[in-house]
Length: 198
Image (tube, rainbow, N blue to C red; front, side, top):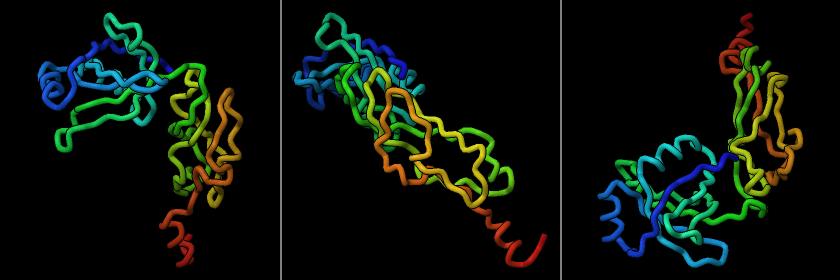
């Protein structure tokens, strides 16, 4: 997974009042925690964060925080929670978790279906059963997404987690018997079969 960089500033004041003043300056308040270090408050540019997160829609974002004048706060992190305004949807607050790039973590990663699926080309419909997989890997080896090629899947067939090819440096924790997807006959095709239409 690509490591993005984000410039930030240590924020000595906490609470709703100081956080509101930070937002009024076009910044986002946040907190960094984990790895036995005490939680620390930071702030960072709203636009920079939004551009960065646009590259990680539906995925996990690893960010190298560069906190001005504070090497202890700087370092690799993962975005763990984003609080948004209920109606305007703008970001209000972000939680970052410190990570060790060589330490194994368990995390859900999006699935990406690829290939011109034979059953779909024949008129079937792809029914999704899973949109992501639970995996274990080091943060350094964490993939942005996992591709699954369903090219040869025919109508009436399914593809299970256990049928995936091994992924280097990644252990899949999702039940291997679970379906990722199945190709179902379309309603039109079912209707034609019942009425005897060709």
